[in-house]
Every structure is written in C-alpha cells, then in structure tokens.
Length: 263
Image 1 (tube, rainbow, N blue to C red):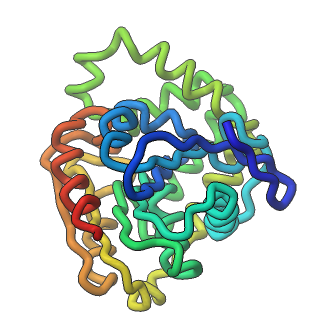
Image 2: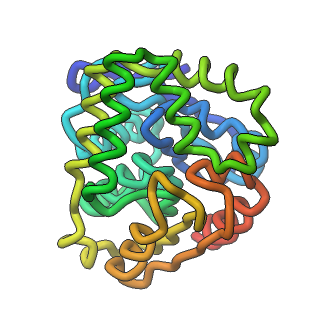
Image 3: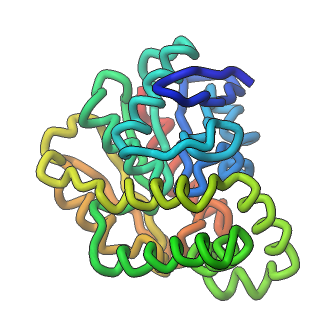
C-alpha cells in the first residue's frame, strides 16, 4: 500500500490492473473499499487508482478544510504514482473532487464521470447533514452508519439485503474519523459551489444518477449537465445513492462505454 505525505496527512492509495489509468474517488465515506464491487472487472480494462481520502480509512483521521484540499491530495497521489493524466470516476464527494480537479488541475484529467453528486449545498442538504452530524456526535458511529444506510440504499434493496447491512454498517463505521473530522468533511461538501466556473470545464463529462437517489437528488445532476459544456447525462430508474452497489450492471452500462471511449 503506497503512502504519500501532504499537508499534515498520510494518504494511502492502491494501484491495480493494467491499461489506461482510471481514478476511482468515493463519497463521504471516503475509502477505497467503496469500489470493491467494480475493482476486479474494471482492473481488466484500466490501471485503477483507489485511495482513502483525508480523514478516512487508513489515511490520517485529520479534519478537511475544503474539497479543493482533497483535490490537491489527489494531485500529490498522482504525482507519487507517476500518473500524469487519467480518467476519473467520482461518487458524490468524489464527484466534487473531480470537478475541482477539472477546474484547478485540468491537465491531470482526460475525462470525468460525476456519479450521484451535488453542485452546491442547498437547504435540503443542509438539513440532512445537520442530522448526520448530530447523530454522529450524540448517537455515535453506529447511529451515523445506520442512518447513512437509509440515505444510500433504496427500500427495495434494504428489504432484500437486510441481513447484510449490520456487517456493512460496522465496516463503514470503522473507516470514519471522529465526529469532528467527519463533520469537517460534511461541511466541506456543503460549502463547495463552483457553478459560476463550470463553463471553463473543457474535458468530456458524463453525469450519472438514479431517479430514486434521495441523498443527491436528480436535480443536481440536471444542473451539472446544463452548466458544463457538452456534458452528457444518464439517469437510471432505480438504485438510490449507492447505484454502483445496488444495480452494478446498470451502473456499468452507464459509465464503462464513456470511460472506454476516452482515447
């Protein structure tokens, strides 16, 4: 497991597979493990770079100042891995990191998939995140993880996989930082709003979202597609915020043709 030191944080990342480089960036959970359902198949097509973000997983459990700070972390990881330019697939917070990369480090990305992400923090998201912070601070990691499951997974999937959720929640909770650290991650994504600059994005972008995603509702993806020049939008009927886990075949159909077309 290679490591990078940057700005008071030890960052852990993984390289696997062969082919053109593809960065996989996860959401607020922030760990490389999110992509486990895709890793083996994608590694047959790409050289995958997965990483634990600042404040999560094996990386240092330190507060996050901004999405832009996490994008700078990713640049340091790419430099350490010897990758000059890569495709990127970002889920939720990872999608915001991808947007920051496309704006602030455009030479490092050749294309970007923004999967179930947000353009800004609105009143709805502020209410959801305030409750998440409260649960983590007063109810602990277990309560936070249980509420997160309700935000990630749609009812039909929870009903079919209820027996697995306790173990999944325990694993997710183990990757979290303290309430202060995770709160800083929540605050960073709420503050992130670069909509006025989206017209500068000059790489191919595909936006992917499930219609039943209640954590990053479809209207955010519609706004991405409207404001980013040439962006394509793909909407999947169901799968919730965790589309890549709940409906992996539908997810692959939505993202792989686009990623493989990036020559």
